[in-house]
Length: 79
Image (tube, rainbow, N blue to C red; front, side, top):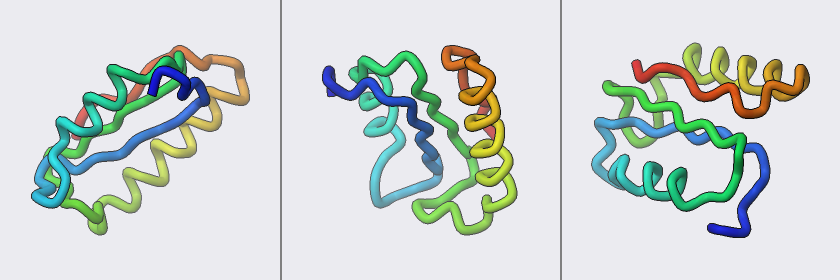
């Protein structure tokens, strides 16, 4: 993970039972990327199937910031 330095956005449902949110938190902490956003959904399950509008909005914000050069702007607030 120390070698992972690419821009990335991670989504995780905090209601997921398959993979705990702590796995994504640990990845974000250990990554050397300066532009890694972790977006959490309190009600989202493993598939985030009911969160598609939120996912699309956050992805658009991520790429818009990246294109503007705001790489270290930060992630969205948890839902």
